[in-house]
Image (cartoon, rainbow, N blue to C red; front, side, top):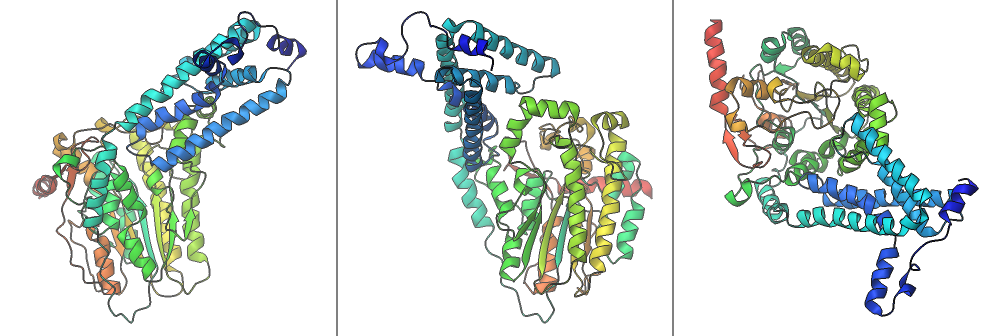
Length: 554
């Protein structure tokens, strides 16, 4: 910093002297101490994280909030230390005030557009200029910032503390624990333990829906799977319309437990998310001597897994930290210029290609004595639309110019090509034939229920009342891909109405001798995001449409 600015910062102050010495008595002294304490340098960054957690406390773990809060505050304290180097002769309170202005300028108000972002930064620069030019205003400015930041922390913190989530969560957790007891022990089997691959292609539509809604014929892909020995359920439906409910049901081999009425109207996702981290299937396989390989996403519930022996991901930030980055000036610039280092769209594209490469490398590696369970969650054809059929990462302009239909079917084509390559590599591996399950957890969102499917991660859908969604749209949402490679199992076909809840019941019964009967194939919806555990069965609604279509075709 120049000597002129340093002199400005170190200039004389007007008015009463700073600090507790300006007062007599305990209470006035405490007020003076609080006024001069630059608490704003801690409270301003904390206010952002507390606000984001308030908006998302029903889907972000408390531990992640505390970790992110500590990291963000430490980062801004580091900014203050840097300013000390640039302003060595300035009083420490003025250094802290300069750091707070810089902090404010780096934050873009949540949801602001480009012009408003620019105005916000300009206002912060003007305020910083006034701070430089008017030393007499610094003390009052610092106190005002501290008061405002205190309110910005206290108000959402009070709302968080009063949330019904904290009262409901223990009951929800208890119901899940009771509903998912440990699986029966494996029976006697002389078979070698096969590797088990579970590939989840998020929002991959069933073939008939692809043809009807997107004018895309997926027969070539399904025929290639069948020719490799896969069983395909042509009429498969998801058990639930959202990823978390669906995967929890599949990986725990049962439907979600019924909840007491007092907690069914809950918006708390965390009990569901927790049962994605420690599932009955993974626990059973670990106890059976399997090594657990986990290929994750940017989405917190499948970003990583605390029980995995090996996790594979690429630069996926914890959800709250990612939201903080999204609302920063750096995040806004990364989106605007589509920087390959920080841009979420580009990272999403590279992450999906990376996971397919990991699977191929895993299949080509030398055999090991320890069998492995591989869970791979792919966010293709799930939006945002970031990749074309050839695997080229798309810019926002490219994706916007192509339209929803072309974007979706090209991500389908990309997934098809990479899946077939992975399947070929796995089946060519020496040793006992593997089990391979390729499924989608949910179908694509109907266009009328979708939002921005190009520029954002995780904010691409509305919050509909699923009990009022038209049957045709519900079938589009629930009709899914389902294919299984079950060598030597004796299973010669899957029921047309097969649902994922029975996927691993079949596997454990056929290969591990576990006495598990199939459950009735049923599909449920919940009302909306404020009633996550209020389930309504829609099995008959879905199949009525299938029967009607079959009659029309005849």
